[in-house]
Image 1 (tube, rainbow, N blue to C red):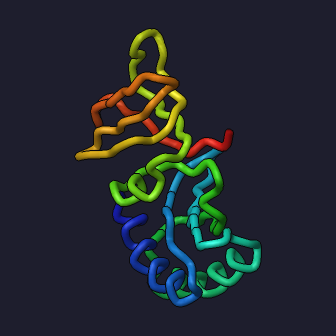
Image 2 (image 1 turned 180 degrees about the vertical axis):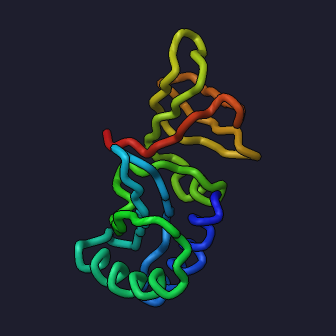
Length: 150
């Protein structure tokens, strides 16, 4: 993580928790010439617009005071989404048995994308069952793992 996302995570996690929300991810990205700070949240039963608004209102003054980002940016709070990306080691066990798409940097058996059921995760290696075949992809092979709605 970058210094900016680390700093924002340190501010956002307690603010989200105080509102009964889980901080899912923080992104600081440049798109179309503009910087975006995106805070993704989750909670049991799903996230509504009111949850996003509440965290935005709670976090905005904390960001102004701490000032972890020197340049101007667009600040957004949103749901992690039904087809969220799994990034941290702790994200994976929660979704064992769920449909996922594993995207690879280089093709394996002619494909860079495998859609199946998440069956395991260990030290960055991702295991998935596709049809009647089991695959385990090493951490260095995996570009992205995302939940899938089927």
